Length: 304
Image (cartoon, rainbow, N blue to C red):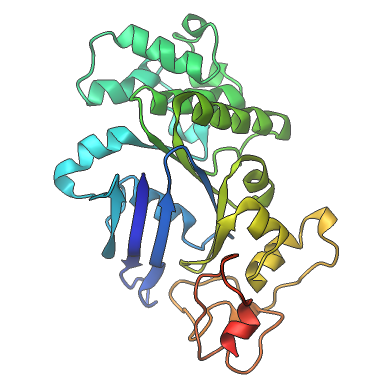
């Protein structure tokens, strides 16, 4: 359904610092009806990748494909109808001067689809779990809870009948009790509408609860990918193991050393080696392939 091939996004030098390799050769697929969780620390390039997938950031090289067709500027408007972005902060995503009806209707209006607009907005709000929908039409964002605001944002995406949703930290700003409701909504939309989704998060618990596959990103690259069970129960990359170690049930905590990722100073070799608790001679000269359960060896054996 959605694919990237050797996607690279490099930002030019600024403030005396070199170019930033925000996304650095990413290959990723989202199959029809599949939910893929993209996991990693802040600054690893997840949000930049998400914005490239919806056409908001132009790749430096590589390509984004939808149903096997490369994305280009001539098809961008039609593409954005099919691949919708759900932002992290619903309070910031919604115009405080715009009521719920107009917020959800904005997409169809931009695409010139005003026939049956009331029914389209009604249906989108209902599918997003705001029922009865007509009770929300004239409300403004400040009259809604955080969970209701996020449902309005999701309804705005659904109003265009997309086939893929790219959700950037969709529950990060919500209370724990509301997060489960929004995650269940995404699962229900997948089951009822056949939607595909890429869900960006730093939360491994979210991946466990919602995803079919997990891609772990570090410093612009996917370092490990596989099913939820393979990645979260049998991690192969030291970075994945470090992320999992913060969970209460994981046992011994892995403490990362060194500085957090800096896309303007990507190290040679395995880019995780300056912070890796298992590094040894050779890590700084040889890069790792993307690890998965299909590999017969883990990272140390690959290097050796």
